[in-house]
Image (cartoon, rainbow, N blue to C red; front, side, top):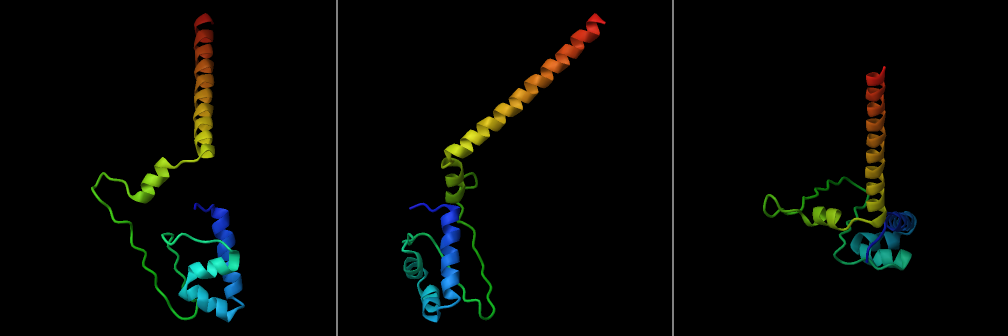
Amino acid sequence: MSWTEEQVKETVSAVVSKAGSDAEFRALAVSDIYAAIKSATGHEVPQDFKIQVVDGAGYHVNVVLPELRGAEDELTETELEAVAGGSKAGAEKFFYTVGDIAEDAARTAIRVGERAADNLTS
């Protein structure tokens, strides 16, 4: 299951809101965030989707380890997904942008050529 950024934001907002006013739900969110999300939203989160909840009481330090790298020229899973799983909208935006740049360059070249021709005939 793939979640959009909006779905993640809505889910986090629902969990945080409920955890701010319901002590029993707050304890569930700290001990089993997957069950808490299902309870608050009805959505199941894949177990390989890592979520960590930190109770705001007290002091905490989180250390996020980078992905384990293989060979020096090998992409990490995240990097591979970023280049392999592009969206149609992203591709369209890219090609429209490239087209706009090419069109602007062609117009500039035409203007330069016209000026050069004018200078030759003057």
